[in-house]
Amino acid sequence: MPSVRASRRATNLLLLSVSATGLIGGIAVRMSGESKWAGWIWFISSAPVLLAVVVGIGRAVLRREAGIDLIALLSIGGAMALGEYLTGAVIGLMLASGRSLEDFAEERARREMSALLGRAPRTANRYSGAEIVQVPLNNIRPGDRLLVRAGEAVPTDGVVSSTTAVLDESALTGEPLPVRRNSGEGARSGAVNAATPFDMIATSAAADSTFAGIVRLVEAAHQSKAPAARLADRYALLFVPVSLAVAAAAWIIAGDPIRGLAVLVVATPCP
Image (tube, rainbow, N blue to C red):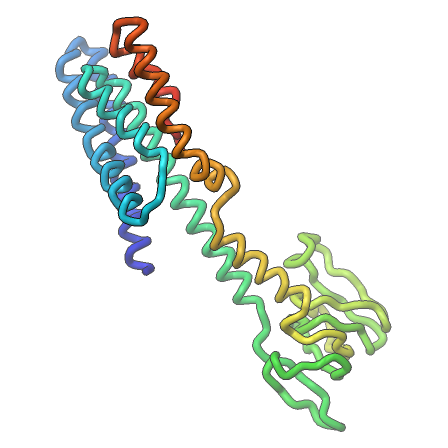
């Protein structure tokens, strides 16, 4: 799976480089008076993006998913067919840059998720009589007396039983300054002991703690689609035929296929 993601990112970066270089190069050539060569440059730079859209549509069909990339396909293909090569190059650059931005956001979210999971403690220091025993986090039960050493994360929600505790709660609240918790005050899981060791009494199991709840929410958000994406998927079956109908009407009324292409360009979903 990581190799697939890396290959996809590399492909999208290549598409972005080709489309951007082609658009800028074509503009430079056209300004020098070589309009014909500029058109060929824009045509060639748009072709890889067009192919990528075709592949994406094919995969969506195999998954039995509806999508609105068909409009992008018709926009670029129509621009190339009608000789509007600059339009095709611009749309290609917009789509390629959108894909690269999506990859960047996904990779950043994955790094943040890994960092969040990396902060999660795996064990806890539990008092067993006069001894301190290191036990798996899942063995912690409400009422257990725990020791949190300096630099360790609070393993589960509880109350401070020592005189005082100084906690770094930036992972939970974003507050960069450590906070002081006196005896009897709450200590939430995920906070880091920023001073000397302190004792606490667990008030919840690790699976029911604040930090565990945050991890579950982040995992659920990472695996689900954004609201805008869900909305686009929901109305794709309606949006595509309506856009095509309006484009056809514009073509028929104006008697000019460029008018129909203009409608498709406006309707093209730019990521």
